[in-house]
Image (cartoon, rainbow, N blue to C red):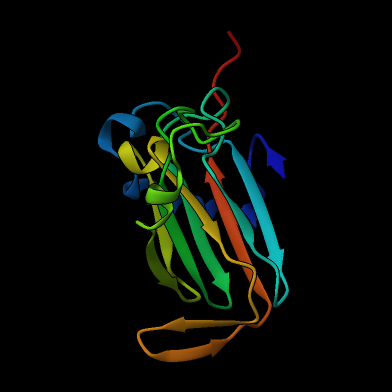
Length: 153
């Protein structure tokens, strides 16, 4: 995890991703001030979550640098906005409505607005992903997440 001015090697990625966020979010510079590099080996995943709403601004970008995976989305539960805590609203019917996107190296996902706040994202723990009838053995995967910390209140 890195905060503040990005190393030169990451600045180019941040500049490429800036136009992906809404115009209203581009007015406050820097657009991103935190970077996370995540490295996964086959079998590892990412639990469904919403990036902390109290800590991070709208406009989160995930760049897939190496490897492939099925990146999944599901609506947050209605009793615990943001998806945190113990659900009491009958989460099972929500889980049946998972939306998936197949990410390859070079793909970028931008989470803003409803996608940022009302949908959790995650990656199932697996060694093989199935997408549109084809099986893709997982290899090592590297992703870069760009986001902005909210100012201290």
